[in-house]
Length: 598
Image (cartoon, rainbow, N blue to C red):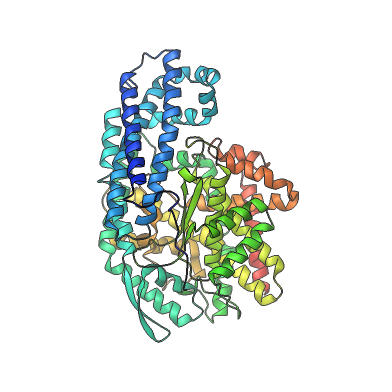
């Protein structure tokens, strides 16, 4: 691929060394200083149990009025610095700026700790504070959630120490994994030419139409991860060990406990979702076997899991992908299409795979300019087109929350995947409806089923892997061999006889960045939640038509101010019952049945 865009953030700050950036950083530090002074002056801490209603109102209002703009400024600076770090891990200036910001972030975190600990002692006043203060009333959901979570705090001194040690603990291990993985290059022969490929470009060859290329790329990738497995295994031990220790000290039942609270769902809902997903494995295995048969095999080797099928083997240029996505978005909403058009025109997207750039894809909010930025590693495959649509869904979600304060917009991962998944469904279903030939339908269905099988089946394997790692990490560190053994066993348990068990991906744990986020364990099941929730919402849209769009945008706007269960109830959905999840999976099963007939 040539002439792929790199993102532009010059409207945020001119450069990392510009006066604008330096002044904004200095302003952030001044804000932190001023709020530290306020907290000390008013003795805002867990030890201050003598608050009056007047004190409670004053402190709560000041916290909200100070923290919201401070977080907006910090998040803008952080997004700007991240735009360099994630696309060029060799950029030492960006890493220095990142480190400087992290120190301020620790101060902000310690301020949150003080307020949360204090709010836990003053919780009796909270209903009255919310009733008489408009700013508190506007943040009622956030305040109640903070007060509830104060039950799972260590002492203020311990929480402050944990925040400071995070820089040299879990966060440092996470950086190690990101740096090591992004700087891997592999010598690979493609089209009779030996190339030095970044690992992200090598992974994209899983979509290559030639089976021999896919197989060699798979083998080269495993060898690459083999060469760096020890530092990455150390990183995973570090991240999971740190979180296990903290969860225990905070009185959490297990590592999943904090994840569920962050996701704003209960254990019953997750268990229902996982059980319904597991019950669907047989139909997905039927799809895997049918795909294997197309390649002359009984079961799929890993390198064919993402392989294109059909004679058309469509390959998109960047301009074709752009046109395709915009056309399909317009079938749903002009506002969605306009936002995506702006993203393309204003260079919000960094699409080029290159050495030093992180793998995968993500969307980050840039609050200071009310924009987003999307990172992907585009290779022209239908899967990558779907990925761009997915990330633009996150951008649309951010757009729908413009006008909300930072604390009003805090969205759980379960709902953060709603708009992204919905976008994928829009693109795929609209394209399928317009398909002119059986061959074209096959290609579109294949792309849909690759995505669905990854989110239902592979996500299940990743959840099982992480759950076992947490359970075993309590007793001792795990070796790279241990991680590989667990990963292979979890893949066999979920993919079953749909995949050739001789050729699985034992190093999935090494490159998936989701495992290495210290503050967010189990960053896997929210994708399944998002897929099936989005699928169910799409079914509602097909029933209601254009009138659905306004309610959908309202849902996205309010994801920081309600639980998933409450928001789902607005559409008559009960996420605690298996029926909704089964109905969504039935739609995917229908796609598989259609695929089998082609």
